[in-house]
Image (cartoon, rainbow, N blue to C red; front, side, top):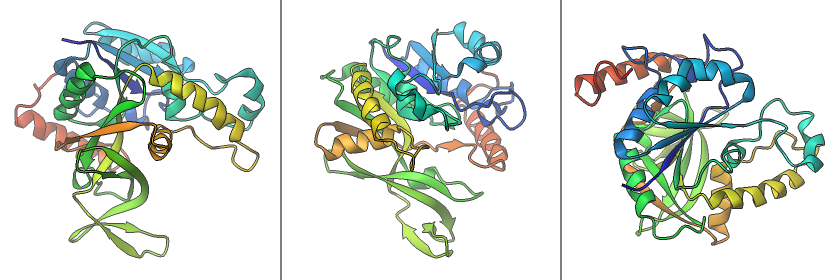
Length: 305
């Protein structure tokens, strides 16, 4: 079995643990949170290391609540995403900001920790077993490691919608060889009586194909990609101005631009599992029900912990 690392982006967790921190909401009968199921599925697929991307002010609490428990079952490392973790010449651009620089910076923080192919996920998303199995197979058998070849786990739009409101999804255009050609960030996709639609500010609906492939921020990358991110981050910071101080360095945007320039190749591996997460407070009840359903189907044991 080849080596592969799971990178969990968790720096968005609030500064105080407790009510309202969606990544730490209990969803399983044994007190499991969504991350427990993600890590369980990744290890089962073959991943042998987990890197948590967190903030330094969360370090002690995060290790107490999650980290030390996970350290007992897999090799764990920590990367720290901070607002001021940028080249010194750009520090004045951090003065007006309240939060770090986005998912691109989150992965850049893992520099030096990752020597093997890796899979990136969000801390508060449930992706399903098929996604980890396909990603692991791709990563350990990947012929090239130049940073410019990658995979994206594509989900089917109908398997990612919320009953409780509109969602933003990266709708993907994929060619007949399963290669990604474009990601279109699409806001406020809602369920309708006969499918799904984009709802604009006037309440007008434009139908969207329920079978569309969508990105849920699950990317399989080479360690060399971190060098590409590093170069691009300086360009991003240089381009920020007073009119756009809150701009974010985001993985889908970075990869989309590299695709457009013809510099990157991304294979789309489609998962048929249902994705779910806590986008709205009301989603928690739905996530608990989905986990119960998976336990009843024998996908998970009653207790993971």
